[in-house]
Length: 352
Image (tube, rainbow, N blue to C red; front, side, top):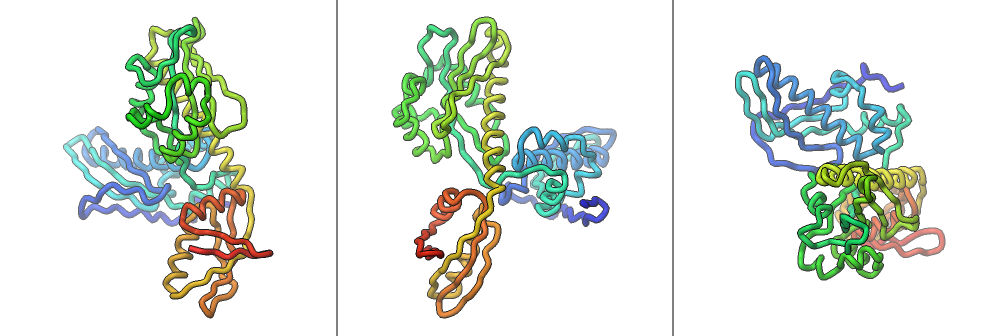
């Protein structure tokens, strides 16, 4: 059983010199704190506890669904600090009663994974997805759809929405001449597959969603959400509110759209994480350093769980690659890293 008392707290505070923002792992997050208390020491202590909690919440939301993340919201500060591996100060200022800092907090991957597993919380494969939203808008049902026009309050809402740290990056279609040439409001509303495919390709997106927002009488905002890649029917989301409070209603609508897309992708990734497979492969190398680099690249793929060398010599490595997810996903991930697989009977030839 997971036991907090058995944990070794490995928090290291780097104070010697400012460091630049970095994001080398999904377990490392950047946090800003601004806390006032009875004195500087109390403000700093409260700020650190706040930073630990924010980092913990952000990382957990990256790894699992909002519903499962909510199960951990009641954890105390004393419990959360056990997951902290390192905290680095990027910059800081303080007065007699105030502490302001930019911090970088890294959680302990092994400890967090073990705890989530004990709590039976499923986690997604740690792979980033990019989703592009095409926000078309009508104030009344009889109106022509708006996309690039200045009156499109729905597009403005998405453009002004703060970026949230997540494995699922959800962004509006950029307002550029290229985007305007790719797709119009009418094409988006009629679900022009060719135009949507071009948007996905040019924005390096995993999927494209058309979010058709309409103020629907007295019932508030009606959003019809359609995915380029999903085979499911369009999803209808209703956000209650008065059109006279359009800014607030549209902001709630964008939050709900993002939440549903993120949970849908995470649930799919969690399902993929339960699929485990192994392939046998042979890699030919000229120099040992070539194989060392290939092994490093293989292990950096989120879906790869283990690379086991069965035999090595005469410029050949015979290995087994354990991975999670479908064959299509691992092949796609390998191609993205510059690998190619050629099948021969019951094994593959791995090229790089």
